[in-house]
Length: 364
Image 1 (cartoon, one colour):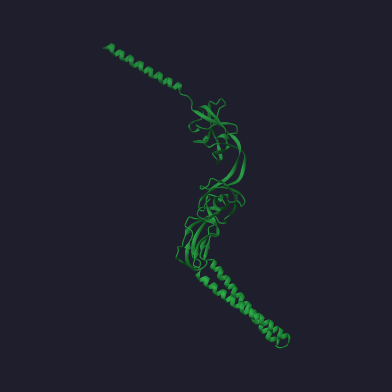
Image 2 (cartoon, helix red, strand yellow; image 1 turned 30 degrees about the horizontal axis):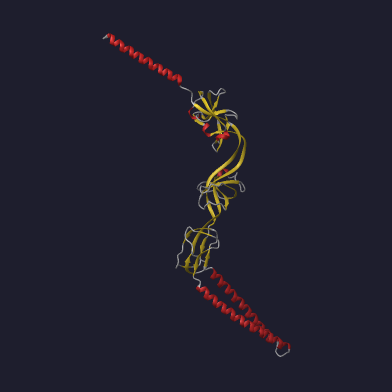
């Protein structure tokens, strides 16, 4: 019995010693974390202000009736693209055709009277030369000729007005664009000023860009602004046209205006992002954003020792952030190697294994 118990105890001791040996072997095998490193470099960095605004159409006319009449035909539909000068609707021209005929008859009557009066003036002028009639009679005939001439001019003007109004029964598109809404149907009677169509043109757009009031003194007309919209992959470089004088009461922002002309894919009402370059900083020390981590001491980066075996914590003061890069104002010098991937898992003095070296240009 005792012999059996001794055997069991011996087996337990062997198993315990084996487990301890494996644990000790595991501890010995554990290797330092693998990281990639990058060298802090000096570059030129733009001082930018970025914002998101909206696009407004500068040519979005509402086509209204210029004369009264009944709609004979609507020639376009909602969403249809139209060209400048294209017929979009027809009004009944019969009333103006009748008025034109009446005016033409009146013109012909007055022309006949004027022609007869001119002959009368000529006859009386010869009679005055022969002293058969007095000068007073001739003057009276000339006055009647002048009156007929003025009456004919007035009638011709009325005829031109009738013809002009008749031409307005053909409604034409004032711009190249797309029919946003159709507010009339065939058979409707419209009066002067009634809206019939809304046409949207994207030929000329204006970007409204809200910027914080704190930079109002730095933004001025003429500055370059880079514009992007989700509906187009093309970046537009424009210039600030003007600044609205009032600061928005709801958002305390200044409204900066820039124009966009003849750009396919840019649409009225779309959002637009704007970047204004206020200046350029030379010889700025930069590192990638993932190299900067937050610790109780503040923002830090991990500098690599000369033998590339340890990472040392450096508290840094940061500045501009753009395009995935962070400006380092203080704490790291250009040329120093720092941890890139894996920085978030390190502590001061941690042992590391460098797997890859990268550059600021390649990373950005």
